[in-house]
Length: 319
Image 1 (cartoon, one colour):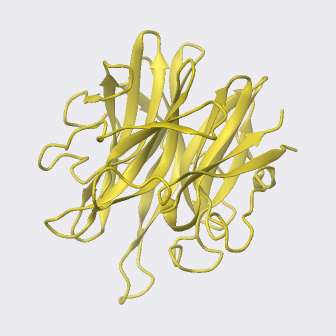
Image 2 (tube, one colour):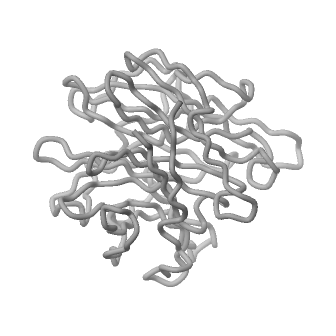
């Protein structure tokens, strides 16, 4: 049984006000380790002045290795605005960063609005040439997008380089459902796995790898994987299809699965018992997890209520 020690809310949007007016949230924290600090990238929400809808931009905060002190906040988003009509025209959420050899690569999830449904997503690639301060897109198109067997909502890519290959865990949409004719359609998505020699061209089998516990309409998101010994551990979040924004007990919670071969996964959500006490920042929702190592410790970052509106917290795995 895995044992966790919660650290509470380590970065608060309320205590660390945004550097630009009208910017909020700190969603999907993802890390890049330096010698003496941890850089944590996250997605903000800011209003599109043209239509009042949200746009996600990627910013960062530097924290000491105890995750107790904020050392620096990036002044501006790390990736510029997308081209008109591009797959990431309406924001990036999330962004996963990986050091590989002498390169610093980032896989992004780009959002673009639709008409009959709210959004579609795809996975892009960017690279930093200034040690993670800014990133430049590899072209205006995605490296992983909808296909014949993954018809929509490809995103949430988490990448590791293992045994000579890039491995990506990501999600793809199986479709949209409308509960009744008075409510907008809601999306359903599952976790899948792909491999690549170069991080650009991916081979995928378009099959869900994590069994459902809420039925076929369960929505799974943000897989993150770490190896401990000979076993791989995945934490993700999952929710009901309908009423997940406001319905009690229907919003995101954390799930867990493990594997010996990166192919077959055994689910056991009891391995991440991190419920929040009533009234706490994560009492109603726990979502968008990220596992990483630092100084011999394994950490889990995650968001809480309202999809990260307050900020993000941490828990330490007691090895």
